Length: 362
Image (tube, rainbow, N blue to C red; front, side, top):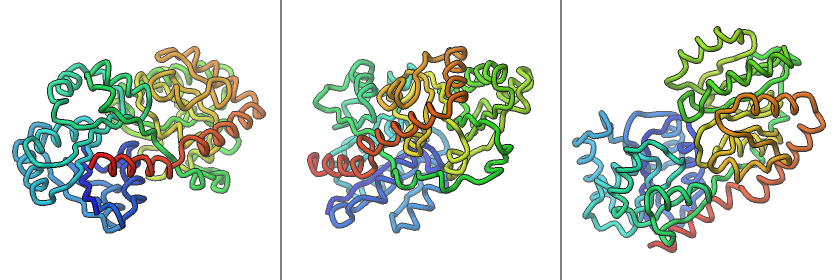
């Protein structure tokens, strides 16, 4: 049996965290023995893993450069002696490779899940890339990014797209009047994601202003919080959108929102492979998204939704309005999206590819 130690920055509700949970919970436990390590904080994903009998180790880093945390992590690696150290996200990837330096761990994997543009992230990734054996990318776009920006050789890169449990997203069974506090009959645009620079909520709010001019009763329902929340509240007031925007906060389960919305909109400036898009498509909802990263590999423009230029509220708004005005188009694109996810992005295929990788590298 192969011992796997997964390392992630935190275990709150987020795309990477949910993917880690789905992967660990579905591994063949006759062949793999998983342990999960978390740099900082606790959260519901950690509780779920523990309830499955998966050991979760918290290292309680006080900051990204906590030497005490690095020493605790290194001691855990020495004690657990994993055959595979699989690191998720930048900070866990950096801490993991530093703590594991010089230890006899047969394979160190680094999952790159977003095309991070911050220069100091890229500089540190380049500086320490020799401490990683393989890179797992969530999309072909991300694979191109790690070759071009970080300098990983093609032979060290594996592409494993995110997956989704399509049966779990049969959300039409969940649709209820008044769901998520949204008025009955109002057209709903769902916006799922952290309120930060990457997701660019200000472009979404500008688009909402344009959409409101043509669809006055539209509701933009935001699921997520982040550092730009207070600024977003101020912008909503400035744009006169107080009656058209709902802030739902972090949702442990977004299915009630997806059941209620007519479409998903995403205004990201950069991405890896957004789980929110996969889940909306699995639920039979069309998507309007920025043409960035793995979103371009999920959304088939004009078939399962629309792709628009990033930071372009007018284009985003036009596509949203066209879908809100055509129930037939929404249904057609929703069906096509669900079929695409079933065929190409199943959760079972994602797990199978990871298991194949672990067998091959050890």
